[in-house]
Length: 238
Image (cartoon, rainbow, N blue to C red; front, side, top):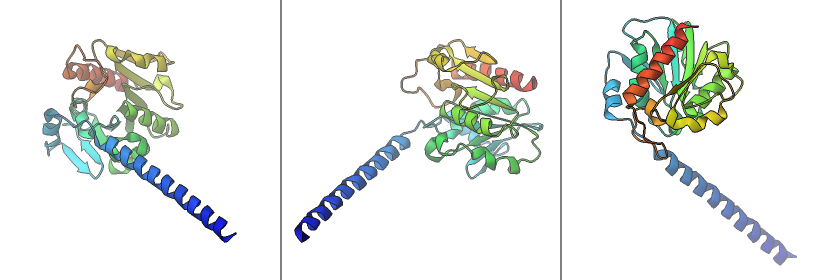
């Protein structure tokens, strides 16, 4: 009986060791995967260094317009993309009087902090009209937040993403490039959709070519200009 129990104990210990090793290997593999992110390019870095208009509060980067208004835009970056890669796009929005708040996500993945917007409102009480949006996974998580907090945001802006959750399409702007047209199969609504001819998935940010993304036939600046124009028109109409 004692020998039988001893064998059972050894068996259980062996199983536990295997399980722990499997978990550790999985965690290690994920951390390696997450650490291999897309860094921002030099254009974005230069904007980051504009101390007169860019302020950093822990995981929030606030880009202020030359002339402030009561409109603010919270932006969630795409997965595995350095958050400041979206500063060129957001800077263009600030030129139209919109205060932009760029969120830095844990491990560069918005899925780990979909409620990050909660930290923003108290920091900028002068903003009365809030919009939220994001790129790719960031757009999905922004959509998830908006669907659960409709009283806090006036509209949703999705770049290379589609509505995730229960949020009204008529309060949503969806923008994607023609080289990201596979997104269409997930879009089951028709309101406020802008398709950018020649645009791809990555060029909403400044982080270079993304793996698996077709090469765009327009520049990132052109793609962002079209997106900004659509965003401004969407916000002005609300």
